[in-house]
Amino acid sequence: MTVDSTKNTLYISQRAANAIIADVAPYRISSEALSAINNFLDEFLYFLIDSARSLDLIRIKDAISQVLPTSLGKNAIVEAELELKTYVESGNSDHTKEKTIEINPFPLQKVFEQFRVKCQFFSTLGERGADDRDPDSVPDLYASEGIHIAPSLAIYLTAVLEYVGEYILILVAKASEKQGVEVARSQEVYSALSEDSQIFPLFRRTNLKEQMESQRESTTNGNEYNSSTTSQLSTHLPKSGYIQSSTPRSPTKSSSYNGGIRQTSLDNSWPTSPVKSLSDYSRHSSEHKNVGMRSTKSMQSLQRQGDKEPDLRNVSSFFNTKSIDNN
Image (cartoon, rainbow, N blue to C red; front, top):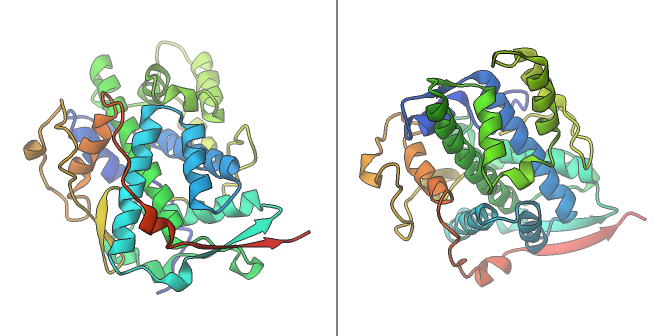
């Protein structure tokens, strides 16, 4: 299967975002507001890769704790490890593709771009359908340069991005309810990211925050941000490095794999959402029928202080890391 890497470049699509928000309240999200959220996730991913400077799972996990040192970060790790454990135990993984090579010096920009493409590719909240997420057809940028990212690593970070993205969407829904607007705007995204103690430590590091504040200063009477501003955010410069916008972008949750297709399953250890009980969530839409259930898990981070992490000793042995020195 040939993949057009210029299409389906969102971590979270409009359809999925509206489905998640609708599970909290009967609201929708504007394209400008969703663009801001996707750009936030883009910067988040860059910060993670920059912090880890490695393709080792342990280093990546440590980077999540450093970049997002709140219970939200801990819960995202729990979710990602459950996702990875399910993938490994599914029998659909290919050990020959799990050999990770460490390159010195670490090619930060190129590794980020490859993670970006793969995370977007594996997204269950993006525009790609289940039939278009075959692991064998995922783009492999810079393979000729010896830069290879194991599918399991991409799946792990995809789970983290989706978890945080859903959490933000729930915050945006609550901000919309507070402001009395039916369509969430960029203002609601800014409020959601600024007023929540779990996400603000990360948001304050981003160029997105500076750009949104600059636009807020240039607007009056609470008018919606100029659409050109949010479209420019895809070419933003993270404070820790440069993110090019030429590479596409796409995100997962606790689920099972069936021929490379992620299918969400509920973990009964999670408490019932204060917004809705699990039985209240409708399974509409064939592609995003489980979005409401996934957002239930994200919702728990609004009040939960963390869970015990699963034992992944068998998962860690799944990786075979080698090192190459380019010096």
